Length: 162
Length: 150
Image (cartoon, rainbow over all chains, first blue to last red):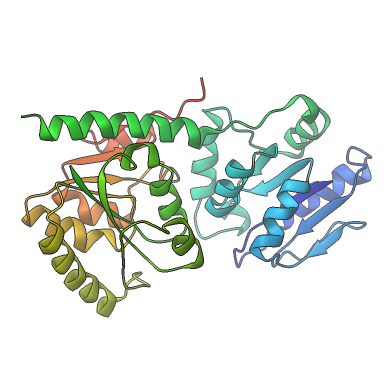
């Protein structure tokens, strides 16, 4: 099962919905797809669609999914990080009225520099979906927590060195 | 060393909580918002619940300022650490006056600019950690924490 989520933004994310439709129409996705579509208007056909999903159900779906395709929002990102199901992020863009600003695009650029999968086009989704068996999710927050703890220890020793 | 850990709920709490390997070995006091998550995870910890929401909420800012005064005078922490957001500002401001060391850890989602709470806290900080080189270029005094996955 592939789980697609656009988070809880008040803006539609029709572009992602169209990308999913295209992949399904071309047979590139053949398994079941569950979509949390928010205020999006153009839904793919033959999917299980929810406008919103309560938090506990959301984490259940992420755990059950083989792959997750998500908008590049903070809340979704942290949950995906924690659960560890392979995921790809699709940033909302202000150009298509998908958000108030381009912070998702900025975050996506930065995340791609540390190896997180980002889809800038339907082609990126195709690569991800078809080669996903070999993927392992990268846990950058674990690496950064470790680095933070090390730095905190260093700095607090420095503060209180006699 | 006595550490005061201050943060909002949600992602800010998660970010601070997962630094347990660091704070777990120190004498510590928590200040955050009371939610089902924080209640569960902080069971057995010393906690003061702060006023929320804090987004552009002046009465709660004043209440948290009063709370910060009370807690800082009571505990006299050596170090105050925050991952934001709004609740951090009164605590870091007063912590500086009370002579504590202060550390702000910016959210990993901030790439090109600091959060408002980090900007407001900046004059009262000993150390600011950021996660991205772009942000460190803009604020050269910040310490870069590399989240590389190598």
